[in-house]
Length: 185
Image (cartoon, rainbow, N blue to C red; front, side):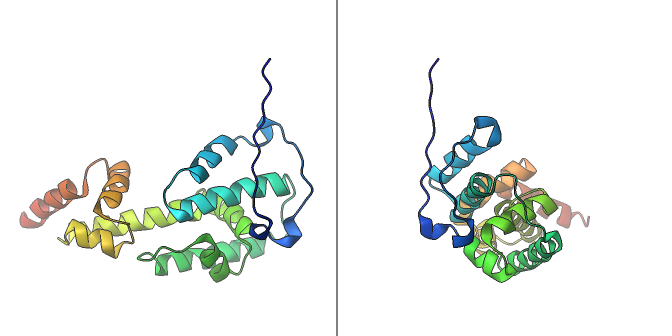
């Protein structure tokens, strides 16, 4: 049978000193999301999305099953991160920016965020942006301006995410909303 392994080298300065451990080997079942995470990290795209995938992978590899005892501290950090993301919707915060605002280690923050909300900080920010985009389009704001005001890289980037969530393009959604406004609904 073919035998293979995957090696992931993370620069030591990216891992907090207290989380550094000697190299160890893990079975595939111990890292079920590793392949998807590595694909996300390797492809060009949103910096926050790649940083979150790396943080989750490092957390799984470095910490394994050991988890923080201070769960309540994690919940507070998640709440602060949510507030920060809601305030920074137009910007492109990094995971370090979010962790700093939350007063938490980025690896711990991502774990607690996923545990409490079921999604990563990147996915949460994307949901906030798409939701705000929907509201702005319904009020008649142009798609170009909506993309700018919601922190998307450009109109095509917004359109891709909008269509995934709502099943139609922002322009089509805006037309439908304007007809409803015209009918007084």
